[in-house]
Every structure is written in structure tokens, then in C-alpha cells.
Image (cartoon, rainbow, N blue to C red; front, side):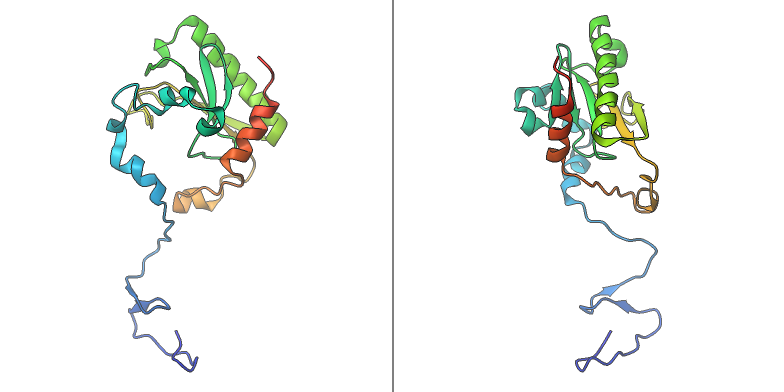
Amino acid sequence: MTDSAGVPHQQPEGQMTDEFELAGVPDAFQRLWTPHRMAYVKGGQDQFKGKDECPFCVAPGRSDEESLIVYRGKFNYVVLNLFPYNPGHLLICPYRHVPDYTDITVEETAEFAELTQTAMRVLRKVANPTGFNLGMNQGVTGGAGVAAHLHQHVVPRWGGDGNFLPIIAQTKAITQTLDEVRQQVAQAWPAG
């Protein structure tokens, strides 16, 4: 810190202030402020009590652009994750409000699998990932963010995309806007 003449002055040992001379206690953590996540923190799993509040039930009733939908199938649709792990993080969702993979029909399962394969092909075409993470978190205990509505993650991966930020700061740097990614993926999706 400096005085009014710009001359640095010493802080008493153990005392820390910022340039505005606000007090703080030093620790090893950096802070990334994410106030937009408060809606999920406050609501938790109980925020989606039925089909009317479920984001995966509401999304198909809106425009593709508003809901970030990239493709609509007969039984399932493909949507961008609102809080992606990487650019192009897609979700495969059945239209029906069912919580478990064992709840979908044979026809829904076949299309679900086909859309997963197509999602991988499209992402390879538009973003050239070198790998993927595919998965479903089943139930609250299994880590599902929205446990009441089945959805599968398709996460494109690149060498070096797992830098220190997610490990140290639980933060991901996303290089494209959701709208840009939605347009690229939707345009590259083969006509059904």
C-alpha cells in the first residue's frame, strides 16, 4: 500500500488490508462470485415439485433459442446444459417426466441412445473434442441436479481442459456463449 504521496508503507505483521483499506483475514482461497447460482442453492432438490416447475418439462414449450434446445426428436430432445462443464455440454432428455432410466420405454431408450451417438458426432464435427464423458446421475444420492426428470450428460473433452481452476477453485472457464454453441450444434445436427 502507499500513502497519499505514493510512497509504500509497511503493514503491521499479520494485518492485511486491500487498496481500499478494508480489513481481511488472509487465507489460501481465491473467490469467484457467482450470484446467479443462488436460485439453485436456495431451492435445492425440493425446488422442482412437479411437472409445472421442472425445467426439463417446461423447456419444450418454449422456443428452441429460449430453452437452448438443439434438436427435438419424437420421444426425447437435446438441450444445452445451462451450467456447462465444457462448451457444448449437452443433455438428452425424454419429454415424459420420469426420474429413472428404467422408467423409459424401449422406443424412448432407442431414440435416447441414437441421440447420444448423434450428439457425439455433431460435437466432433463442430468442436473437434478428443474425448467425451457420458453419464446419468440417478436420484438425489447419485448426484442428480434435477433428480425428478431423467437426463443424460454428453460432455465434450479436450486435452488440457481440466486445468487447475476446477480442482483448486471449483471453477470452469467457458470459452463460448451458450447462444453461439446452440447455433453451431443445431445447424450441424442432421435433419430428422
